Length: 141
Length: 141
Length: 141
Length: 141
Image (cartoon, rainbow over all chains, first blue to last red; front, side):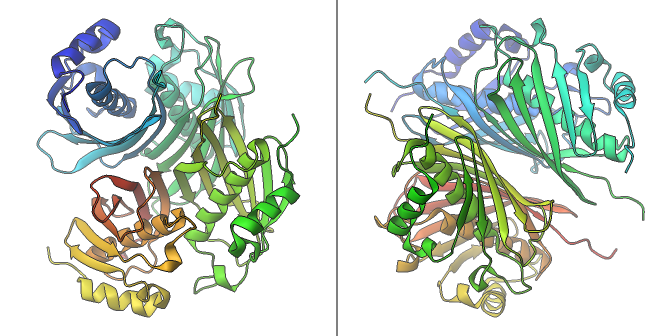
C-alpha cells in the first residue's frame, strides 16, 4: 500500500498549518506504513533551567509525530483528534537532540492507536514512552 | 494539618522559578489539603486556529496544578518529578477561561497520585481529565 | 432523561449474560444518569495469600461497573467494548467489602469515558482509581 | 550482567507462590535482561461466549509477565507491586494461543517501567498493548 503523504508532503502541511513548528526544524528521518522516526534539534526554547527538556515538549513531540504517522496513511485528516495520551517519563533528557520513534498498532475506522519512544541522541535508554489514541473522522462511505 | 505553603507562597514560588508562568495570570481559587481549584484566563497564546485551546496547554495546566497541590502539602520540593500522566481529551474547549480542579488521592513516601478535571467556564461537562503520578524525593530520615 | 435500564434490569442482564457474576453478590447501591455506586462483598475467591484482594479483581470490578453505568443510559449495548483502561493501585485493600463509585464524564456517539474509584469499607482513602474508555456501536441512523 | 533467575527458577517460583497459575501452562519462550516472550495456551477457562478471551485474562497476562521479567533481573522481590497499568484493547483475540512480549524500559531504584504486547498466534496485529509501572521495595543500602 503506498503512503498517502510522504515526508515532503508532511513538511509542507506543517509549514502551512503550524508555521511555528516549521521553525523548530523537526526532521522526519524515516516514514513507512507502520512507523516514523524523527529528530528534534534541541534549542534554547525547549530547555529548562538545568539544561533539561520540559515535559510539555516531550508530550508535544509524541502527539505531533503520531499525527504525522496517521497522515502518512490517511492524508491530511484535519478532523483527527487525540482522545487519550498516556506517558511515562523515565529519565531526565540530556541536553542533546531528541530521537523519536513511533509505531502504529491499530488503524481502524474510528480509532488509531500507537506508541512513541523518545531517546536522547547517544543514549540507548528511553527518556519517555507514550501511548496515544486518535479519534478519526468518519469516512462518508 | 496546616498547609506547608498557602496560595500566596505558591505564587511567589512560581514567579521566582517559572517567570513565564507568572505572565499567564493563573489564579488559585482554592487550596486545601486534598484539593486545588484554579482558573486560567484564556489569552491569544493558548488559542489554536479555530479559537480552541491546544492539547499541550491542557497537559501543562494539569501537570503544573498538581505540582502546586503537592507543594501545598510538602513545601517547595524541587526534586518532585512527573513519572506518569494519562489524559483523556473529551470535548473541544470553548474560547473561554478554563477552570481546573485537582484532587490528591495518595501522598505516600515515594509517590503522589491524583487527578485533575478541566472545564470551560459556563459548562458543566469536562473538557479533559488527567491522572498523574509524581515521584517524590526521599526524605533523609 | 429516564434511565434505559434500572438496577433491577441490570441484575437480570448480568444473571443472563454473566451467570458467574451473579454468584459474586455484587450489589448496585445507587444508579443515576451520571454515576453508579456498588458494593462487592469480599469472599474467599478474591483473596490472595495475606488476606488482600487481587489486582485483576479490582480491574474486573472497575470495568464491569462502568459497563453497567453505560447500559443504564443506553440499554443492553452488547457491542460496547473497553478500548482503554488506566488504573492506579494506591493502597493494599483491607480484607473488607469493596465500595466502588463510577462517574460518566462523556457519553458521545462513538466513545464513553469515565472514571471509577474503589475504597475498602470503613476507609476514606482510595485503594485504586481507574479511567476507562468504551467504544460504542454505531447507531443505525 | 547475569540474570538473577532463569526461566526454570521462575516456573518454580510460580508453582510455589501461585499454584493456580501452574495449571495454566504458561510457557516462557525467551528471557533476557530486557525482554520476555511467553505463550499462553488458550483453554476453556479463558474463553467468553463467542470464543474470545476476556479482558481480565489479558490484564492478568501482562501484569504477571512483567513481574516475571523484573524477577529475572532482581530475584524473588515479593514486595514489588503494580502501581500503574494502562492497557489498550485493539482487536478481539482469536480463539488461538496468545503470544506476549514484554520489554523493560526502566529498572530504577524505586520504579520499574515497561510495556507488553499481546498477539494471537498466526497474526501480526496486536490484540492489546499495556504499559506497566511496578514500585520496587527499597534495598537496605
